[in-house]
Amino acid sequence: MEMLRRVLREERGQAVVFMSLVVGIVMLGFLALALDVGILFRENRMVQSAADAAAVAYVEEYTAGNTGNAQAAANAMAKLNGFDTTLATNPAVVTINNPPSQGNYSTASNYYEAVVTKPVPTYFLRAFNKMPTMTVSARAVAGGGLSSPTCICLEGTSGEDLTMSNGAKISAPSCGVVADSVSSNAAGLIGGAQVNAQSLAVVSTTWTAAANESNGGNITAATKQFTGASSCSPSSPALPTYNSGLCTADPLSQFGSGGSTYTVGPGSSASYTNTQTGNVVCYNALTIGANTDKVTLNPGIYVINGGYLTFETGSGGLSNQGGNGVTFVLIGNASLTIQNGANTNLVAPTSGTYSGILFVQPSSDTQPITVDGGSSIVVNGEFFAPGAAMSLDNGTSTTIHSNLVLKTLNMYGGGALDSTPGSNLGTFNQSVAKVTE
Image (tube, rainbow, N blue to C red; front, side, top):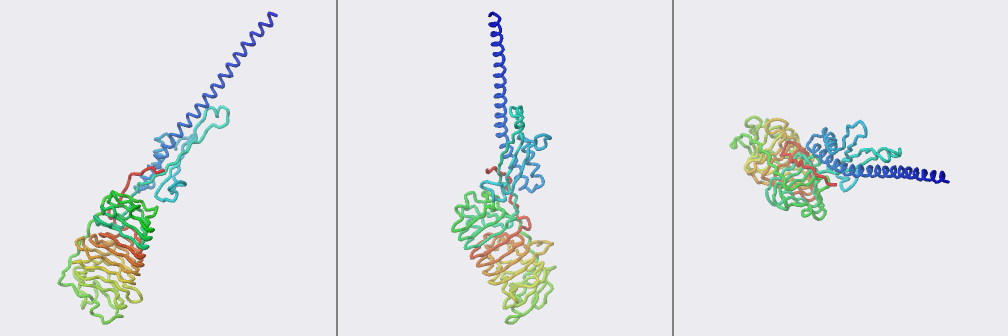
């Protein structure tokens, strides 16, 4: 009997030891599970910071023109936040999506999404051979960084620099519009007018799109909008040397009632053109294409002294023949008009003082520039007229493969303007990228 009691006492001791071991193992399991959960919570917090930093770094490099370095910059910022893409085991992955794959900016081509993922080793789950790693992931969307070549520079310092109405459209997807006005109505769109550009920047700090779009006016989502921008003030080209006493009358006066064919500009007939120094000619006025005339423009620099430069319909619907390598300089408040139905095709010089410049009007001259309804103007060259108000109206189709420098631009009645960048008008830079999502 005594032996039985001794055996029972020994078994109770073994049970205590066994239960202690079981409880210890369970506690270790809970500890390991808590460790797994804690690590995952920590990694989830860190991966969001890595995604935010990667998105901003990518945008700043990409919009600064360092496109080849953008991914490396995103990877580097992820590494600084604990997510190294170069590890041999369980490396992080930084994926850039443009436009973002989801969210409010999924259709905005100037916003970038960074998705950072990484397998994180587990302890409890690894011990049971269930899940040796778990993947953490986060996304961030950044925008705001921009390096935009300006192709439309409006130098009016107050009031409405850009006025658009009744279906007028600007298409400048590879460059931007800058309005120097400090007024809250610096740029206004009504009645179905639309701006689709890389950027629309205004000097005003009080301008808002919401207050200046009405009745279907629209600044597209792809057009980045900025207030408080620096003014665009490109340098004025020097005026050519000419002798006003040798300027001739409009050659049109030499040619009857219409249907004539003649050539103007350097090298044309001395009876109505005096070629001055080099390749400069001067007319007190010049009409191209009146009364179905067929007028050929020789290459060179045309000074219009105090009168008018007018393009009309011309023979076969063409306002001019030739016109390759020409620059028109409007002096003494000379005016420029492209009339209803005119169809011009003009190309600026590719070298020399006026390389890339088609029309020059000094800033002191305030004569307006008018492109009337139904005109089709295709030009390769800059309009440089910082004191002028330009109007494009009534179905105008205008393709300008360069820049516009004006005081104001008024577009209405279906006027359309396609613009691409030429020379540097003071590139607009907005280098501070921001996380938006």
